[in-house]
Image (cartoon, rainbow, N blue to C red; front, side, top):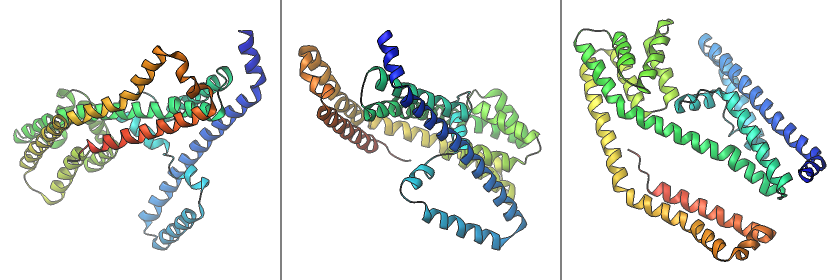
Length: 330
């Protein structure tokens, strides 16, 4: 225990520097999100007033900034999503946490893992930074994406039933808004909670079209975009909404069945990809059990660390290619 405390005290300056850097990055992200939101608000006011010249000047200015940002500055500003995007993804995944809390947790986890690997285990800065990024940022983001995909599949499985319930309500004489209330009460989550949000937004005085469009942006699902477009077009041009939604329900069920059929047909290829991807790890584990000292060069020697990283990168690339080969867009 005393040795660990001594190591931490010796590297206290580096630890404080890393914490300060992550804090500055979090502050810059917060400032950038507020600045983007303010620019969007100003842009909406300009468009509302019809100021065409100001719009052209703003576009030229943005284009000039886009040209001026090169190299590291471009990659530090362009790919970073704002807190609104992160909040939408968290809401789609069903997480009860704010975007700022999520970003702060990722930063704390990355710094903590980096500190443990570098100061306690004594690994190099590159390995420590890689471990902090993978286990503190990349892996949680992948788990978040899996949660979003799981929620989306659950939504698409029940969504045609919700449309059928709306159709029955329309044919019995209920208005669309009342049919939404029935869906929010009768259909289970995540569809029920989505329509609860839509109905609550409409109760605040927001038009139905705008409430549906905002929900469609949050969900980012093609099927819900179809539903929103059908209702918006029908309210603008007229027509039999019950018949339109009934046809849409049949189309969505066909898409869902086709997706399940493709998943069943590609199951052999996905299983092969999983076996091939897991085989190197199994071989390394067996060799470590049979001859423990045989793999030490990959762990102790810097050259072994380099080639182990190269092998891991090649495996990740191969796994990504095999995953793309077994995925189909409908």
